[in-house]
Length: 369
Image (cartoon, rainbow, N blue to C red; front, side, top):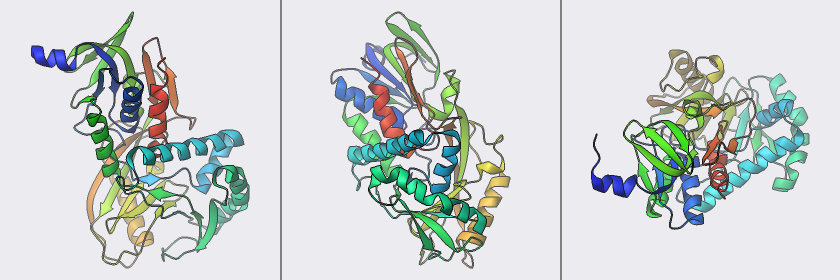
């Protein structure tokens, strides 16, 4: 395609900052750059019609880690590292809420609940509950994790579960829409359906080659998370998450966010429906992909758990299915760093994009002197 003189001049000439990816990280990076450089020309490039990765496809959990997840993290991280992970997630959630406003993203703190398949699993976590509460005491000034009886009448799980008193939920669509609205209103340009294929750094400029046009920018920021390895040589693996949602259910009594089987399954209420995702543990290798889609193995398991455990003796119909692509690695810490003089990245959010995306975007922008 030959772009017009006007298009070249307005969108692709004298570009100060180019951000690749219009998800939570990319848009927050662009906003922070605008705040720091009010007169800069800022461009956000997005390969999808909407943000392509997980920002508009996640389950909307405003969470910082279930008890079993934090216990597992202590196998590969020090206590200080786990404390700092939770601290960053809390700071990120607070930044998201402050940036957009609780009402705009339908933030609700209805608590989070971890369900256990066996008494043994429950008791192994219960034995470490007090130690984790003590570790997190400086952040919350009260116990994060407490025990409750099965008040939602779930089946095929142990009678007690562990409650996270500070977990919340958001409307993912509203969050993304308000973030896009805020970015556009600040004079930042967003171009959709454009894919960056490679970039070359030349002295004080970076040449950005896309499937539509090649242009120069002074600084380039990569915020593509699970798709990072298409442009970067960093230790990020894609991880697909499959999700389904039911049709509206009369008198739905379930309220909150729920984690099952060490968080490999997760569900919540939304608009009198149950949104249910997970099952990656059934086929780790198969779900290590950047291809969107569903598999019978995982979808059948989700339906089975939905009908036998979450909503037994209830007529349930599935209305819609989708998937999102996360970025994971051996460590839970996100990669936020300067790659060269004029290229930077903020990737590998480890399935905690809602929690840390805003903060990672801010830290990414702050790498520029």
